[in-house]
Length: 596
Image (cartoon, rainbow, N blue to C red):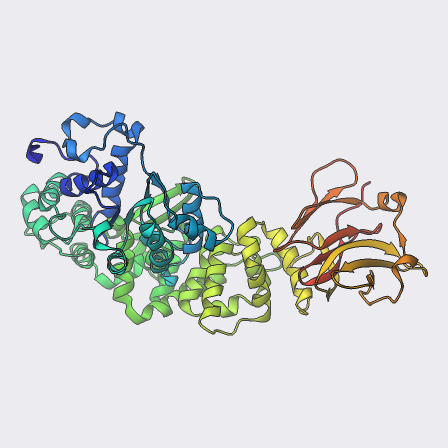
């Protein structure tokens, strides 16, 4: 029998031998191995580090850098085993993660129902899949996406007869799943409980990181987990203690005790860290914004406290980004969670102050959203949602076009689901949001499609700047169009003739006005090749898009994207694009320059 005490601990994990043996057994997939393993524990308990260390033992390149002979053999998966597949949920909604898992597993399906059927079918071979960091799922913290991931992704995977799942989940989701997964196929590894807790590993960590090793055993006995030990070590380096040291139990204690050793009050420290805590989890705040946003939260100027607070702040943040564009973020999300919890009901007001400060920093004049900072475009949605001010922002067409579309879609869908009254413009944008996030269309395309959708919905065209590739002349409801063409009426009026499913006659509309024209189809004159050649653009038509090409050689000058199949498209000699989609018929005056 192997004696774990004779082997070195994993060089990255520093212990957790019992848990590593269980993970290796899961990967080996022996007769007694569980099909599903849920790795859980309090925030800061070391779940992510343990899972990373385990994946290192599965990865051939990482194994070459490790002295495997010095490790407990029961913690090292066999070399012939292929590494498990990994599906990273960071920033993804539950729906996005489900389809990401489908891609990783090689499943071919068009609908969610079909995908779930594929997961439920029997197979002769099993596939190992690791889902790390479920607590990082979702584009916005306020939407509590990990709960949806557990219900809509992890549970179907866990019940699949051919998928073997290892997932790192928060305690709440682990308990929820454990009630729904048959006990015979499930193992829950709670790093805070026996036999998975590793007190000796915590002692070794404290001995290795503290400048005063004599405190190691006492700190390890008191600390809630590895994160508290790590923060305490950094705190004592930044602000050494001459005499006896009061040791913390949790992250909040670390903050309070560190502030005291630095001669500051704990509220000042929390206010200085508030912009980082109130940003999205893992999001970095541009360094020049840090002090102004902290002052906004505090309601008074904290610039001197910030300038004098190097030692006060040092243990809790890290620098990221480029040298000429530095940004900062918390060293661990649990610090942010503790600060938000301490703020309690005032978090909403703090977020409102941050959102207001960010909006006050917008440039003046036309195109202000186009020239807004990346942080503003990406993170303002989250701040405004938690502040309760998002409904006002989504009446601004510039914000709708230039904000990060994934975050904005998630937030606006959340508002709609809660029964909030959306501005008409936001309702139209929400109709297009799935198209925007699916195609990753840029701001100029989004602006042009929003202009067109507003006209379809009977709204005035929003002010979106002069650079749009078209201006919608009109839009008429006309469902069921299967084909259309540009033509000329007997009196010379340019018209669009559309074939409608089930109709005996063509539907004919005047191109300039969209008004119906009562003329039989056989009396219309189709465009000649010479007339078509006079148009400055030619069309590349796909099932759900129209690409605009210059008549001569060159790159595309625009694109129309549709959320569903197009019924037809054509263009007149004077560059009016005629379109039919599920909503009806429309005419768009193209603004692309004519060839010189």
